Image (cartoon, rainbow, N blue to C red; front, side, top):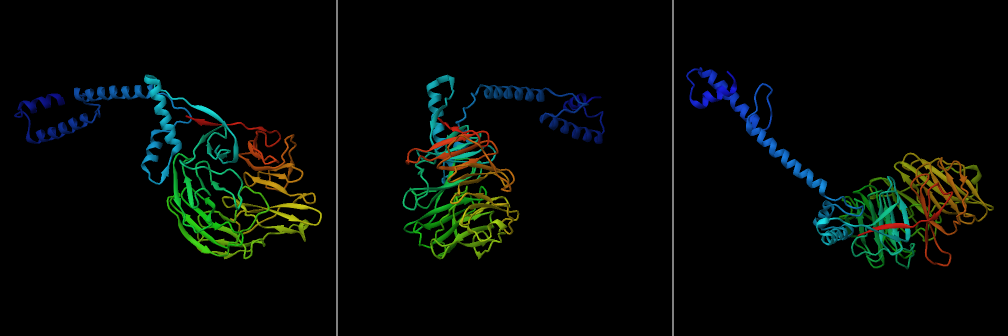
Length: 477
């Protein structure tokens, strides 16, 4: 007797041929079978009923409809934002996503114009770059000559305008009297900036500029955010000072929610400005290695040598710090310019210090593998008298470039500064700035016109041997 016959006997009331125990067992099994088949399972020893097949057929039809819709939807262009990005921007009161919003408007307009075609169009516009910095994983950030913040994720091939709504970024270098922008491009997706056009306002993004957090840091008359730095997507720090060189105001603010809110963690009057003589990738008077460990420079008298301070609790307390920097024999009796912060790649630090003797200038590269506790020296690189470095850039603890201020000679190291090799090039590197490299091949630099005219962005794809004017393109529409 199979289970279908059992079901018929039970339903027809023919229970006389079955014992009470057998009836109970069959009822339980029948209930289990019905429940299992309702869910679409198949027992090997049982025959499926018509209802599960009906459910399966309906499912196949639905899946086919969905698949057809997916295939029919046209592929978006490179500047088109997803609907999830747009919803995120509109639902968060502390974020701004003008690039996503304008793109969404462009999508809607293109869709209406095309009618049933439902396709979008993307155009390219050539721009002039005023500031640029490449990051790891093909990422990069730039400020155009018109004050627009640009972002790339394909190794600086195509850029996208990600400027927050209502913001214009000054493009000039920092001056105590003129407009300026202080920025920190932490990695491919995390960036922050503050502009003198809106004193105290800090903008930050954790998704490559799709949305922006913005918050105001309290400040008094003449005070503004002089420096901002994020150590990861959530933790950031901001220094508030005045422009006055003899004003020792120093206040440190911290965010732990990606820039949505900022709290003051330290305030003092010992932060007189320290002017750096060396143009490095990261300049300023403050640097955090991670969430807790950090360093800063101060000076009791503006224009004098810096005092060094260290924090191990995220900037809440600071202690006098005397770095133990060994002096190579060639630099005995030389004076060093210690008014520049080290650069860190995780716990590995690179510290470039200029030393001067009566007849020459030297560049010394110090290394630390423990977050700055101890340092080792490399053989100093000698320049001719009165020479110095125009720009120093390290893309990693071992790979770096320098440009001589007078010779305009480009040199490269692949061993952290132990040895340097001149890079023959026909490019005139006079007035070069913003030297930046993604790896040993791809690099950019800004050439400032001697007469104060427009700057020129140049690009190399062979480590600096050959350069050409870079015509960067930004997606629009």
